[in-house]
Length: 153
Image (cartoon, rainbow, N blue to C red; front, side):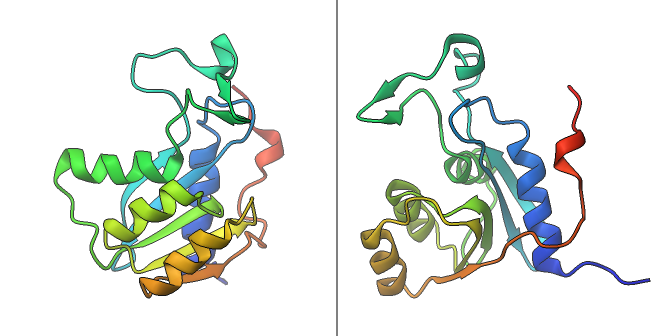
């Protein structure tokens, strides 16, 4: 029996998390991993108890939905909330992190960012990752681990 690689496994987890997203513009998932163990996960959505894009529509300002908290930030905040250290961890994200998430990832001490899809890859985010010696690697979910098209609610 062939097992999927660790990168494929953790990226599949991020894609699974993205299925919980409540934003109608883009669904994103993030998984934080340390020593081959998942320490947190997040998806983009509204604050706990708040209005969701799927219910009220996106709240768009300057072509950006400000109603949602990004998946990376939700995963990092989950670690902060429960006292889980993120130094030297890795993060697997379905899409390249935005500039603000890039800065949060660096400040949290994440050492590697794996992402599946390019998405408005900001040149300054790329520069900041380089300056902070954060490894960035594209890892597309290539194996048929989960058929995401057959998800029922």
